[in-house]
Length: 417
Ligand code: ADP
Image (cartoon, rainbow, N blue to C red; front, side, top):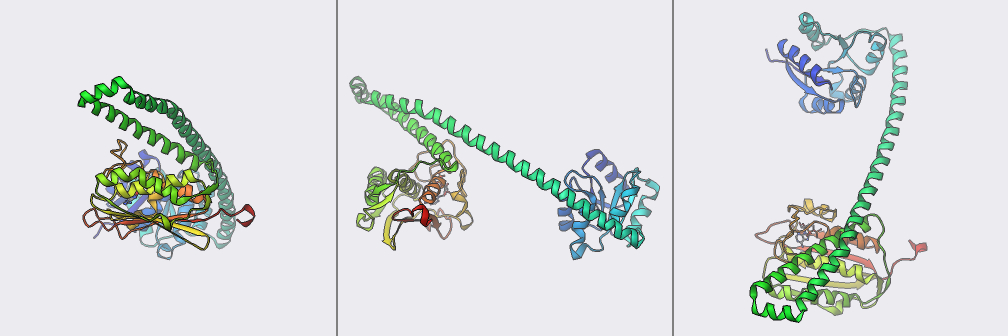
């Protein structure tokens, strides 16, 4: 005859091992779970023939497990047996009210174990007088209500603690990044000075090794500076401390500056850029520096994820008091499943986060996964939207991606919001 399966729910590992051994010895196939919720999951997945459960588990009681399972039609007749200590007598009526089929007492009687289990497997059920059952049901409902309230309070406290921890973490990140930024700015400044120092210029002209060394040093320092700045910006966005300075803005001019910044890279990587300044608004109200950062990040990504010889469109249009601008590329594309996650912090979609961060503009160069969440924070602070469209990710066929931003030409006044 096929072995019947018993799920044993018990949080104490020693008891779990011991009872499991007894059950195996009695000829059953045994599954175990260390908590009530895990037990319920195992029941739903593995459909055991009988559930044997401890009463006091850390997350829920054996009674609650029974009530939860009985709520599902397919488990109405599943034998659910409580393993109870001596002296449990007073609780037995409540166990029946909760949907427990019966109980076995600890310590288990090895000789009778199989006989006892078979009783429940064959549909056996402890009997209880209907009046006592009804009184026990009322009592059980009261217990559940009291416990639910206590748990909601616990959850609220835990939630408060987590929020506090999260704020501490944000503050820590911000202070650290801030403290790193000042000396970094100085170091970058000194390297610049050194590179322009006449004696150094002469030496570098005569020594290619030295020239490469200085350039490598500068490149690495600038990258470090950029990472620190990204972290600082994102932590400010996340803690709603972003300082916006809304002023009349020539967005076309901003876009043009970004284009000029990337022009040498575009040329080096033979990427064709389609950009027409006339499409862009020359007069809107927004924070120019922050929007520059958005266009800069989107363009940087388009360059990073598009192979050499590709095309990038930086386009815009104005309609109904809104500006819409987009960066479209002929790059590797983005999997539909990643298209919302990539706007979250430290999320690099299908890619691995690469902390060593190879060049920001080399094809497939690594990143921290912060750029898009910075863009989202900035655009939302301007009451705008940002999203991506892409047929999917395929580094061979390169289906491309299109990031679109829409923004009001002027921010709504608080009374219009
Ligand atoms: P980073 O580029 O530093 O990893 P981002 O937040 O800018 O971080 O982007 C998150 C992820 O979104 C990237 O790691 C990449 O997987 C994906 N991604 C962003 N822009 C593009 C793009 N134009 N083409 C393909 N994938 C992109």
